[in-house]
Length: 96
Image (cartoon, rainbow, N blue to C red):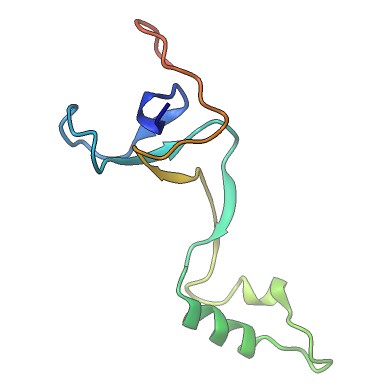
Protein backbone atom coordinates (compact mmCIF):
# COMPACT_ATOMS: atom_id res chain seq x y z
CA UNK A 1 0.00 0.00 0.00
CA UNK A 2 2.71 2.45 -1.06
CA UNK A 3 2.20 5.61 -3.10
CA UNK A 4 3.78 4.06 -6.19
CA UNK A 5 1.16 1.30 -6.11
CA UNK A 6 -1.75 3.77 -5.83
CA UNK A 7 -3.91 4.82 -8.77
CA UNK A 8 -3.71 8.50 -7.72
CA UNK A 9 0.09 8.72 -7.71
CA UNK A 10 2.09 10.05 -10.66
CA UNK A 11 5.84 9.73 -10.84
CA UNK A 12 7.65 13.05 -11.36
CA UNK A 13 10.84 11.82 -13.02
CA UNK A 14 11.84 9.55 -15.89
CA UNK A 15 13.89 7.11 -13.81
CA UNK A 16 13.93 3.36 -14.36
CA UNK A 17 10.55 1.70 -13.87
CA UNK A 18 12.08 -0.82 -11.48
CA UNK A 19 13.54 1.95 -9.28
CA UNK A 20 11.14 1.70 -6.34
CA UNK A 21 13.48 3.03 -3.67
CA UNK A 22 13.75 6.78 -4.04
CA UNK A 23 11.32 7.83 -6.78
CA UNK A 24 9.24 10.95 -6.16
CA UNK A 25 5.89 11.99 -7.52
CA UNK A 26 2.56 13.73 -6.89
CA UNK A 27 -0.59 12.56 -5.19
CA UNK A 28 -3.57 13.51 -7.34
CA UNK A 29 -6.28 12.25 -5.00
CA UNK A 30 -7.58 15.77 -4.35
CA UNK A 31 -7.35 19.04 -6.32
CA UNK A 32 -4.06 20.93 -6.07
CA UNK A 33 -3.64 23.42 -3.25
CA UNK A 34 -1.95 26.80 -3.13
CA UNK A 35 1.47 27.30 -1.62
CA UNK A 36 4.00 30.08 -1.64
CA UNK A 37 6.47 29.56 -4.47
CA UNK A 38 9.38 30.87 -2.40
CA UNK A 39 9.75 28.42 0.45
CA UNK A 40 12.73 30.09 2.10
CA UNK A 41 11.95 31.05 5.69
CA UNK A 42 14.30 34.05 5.63
CA UNK A 43 12.63 35.41 2.51
CA UNK A 44 9.23 35.10 4.17
CA UNK A 45 10.46 36.85 7.31
CA UNK A 46 11.84 39.76 5.28
CA UNK A 47 8.64 40.02 3.22
CA UNK A 48 6.50 40.08 6.36
CA UNK A 49 8.68 42.74 7.98
CA UNK A 50 8.53 44.86 4.82
CA UNK A 51 4.72 44.71 4.72
CA UNK A 52 3.69 45.65 8.24
CA UNK A 53 1.08 48.40 8.12
CA UNK A 54 1.03 51.42 10.42
CA UNK A 55 -1.32 49.58 12.78
CA UNK A 56 1.26 46.79 13.25
CA UNK A 57 -0.61 44.17 11.21
CA UNK A 58 0.84 42.29 8.24
CA UNK A 59 -0.69 43.28 4.91
CA UNK A 60 -0.71 39.82 3.28
CA UNK A 61 -2.38 41.05 0.09
CA UNK A 62 0.45 43.51 -0.46
CA UNK A 63 3.06 40.94 0.58
CA UNK A 64 2.01 38.50 -2.15
CA UNK A 65 3.02 41.05 -4.76
CA UNK A 66 6.60 41.22 -3.49
CA UNK A 67 9.15 40.13 -6.10
CA UNK A 68 9.87 36.42 -5.74
CA UNK A 69 6.75 35.67 -3.72
CA UNK A 70 3.76 34.20 -5.50
CA UNK A 71 1.11 31.60 -5.00
CA UNK A 72 1.23 28.45 -7.08
CA UNK A 73 -1.22 25.59 -7.40
CA UNK A 74 0.37 22.23 -6.86
CA UNK A 75 -0.33 18.63 -5.91
CA UNK A 76 1.34 17.26 -2.76
CA UNK A 77 4.78 15.82 -3.51
CA UNK A 78 5.50 12.40 -2.01
CA UNK A 79 8.12 9.71 -2.12
CA UNK A 80 7.17 6.39 -3.68
CA UNK A 81 7.51 4.65 -0.30
CA UNK A 82 5.00 6.96 1.43
CA UNK A 83 1.42 5.93 2.14
CA UNK A 84 -1.90 7.35 3.38
CA UNK A 85 -5.45 6.31 4.21
CA UNK A 86 -6.74 7.15 0.71
CA UNK A 87 -4.89 4.33 -1.06
CA UNK A 88 -6.62 2.70 -4.04
CA UNK A 89 -4.71 0.08 -6.04
CA UNK A 90 -3.88 0.69 -9.68
CA UNK A 91 -6.17 -1.13 -12.08
CA UNK A 92 -4.27 -3.21 -14.61
CA UNK A 93 -4.87 -2.25 -18.23
CA UNK A 94 -6.64 1.06 -17.50
CA UNK A 95 -5.27 4.54 -17.89
CA UNK A 96 -5.89 7.04 -15.16
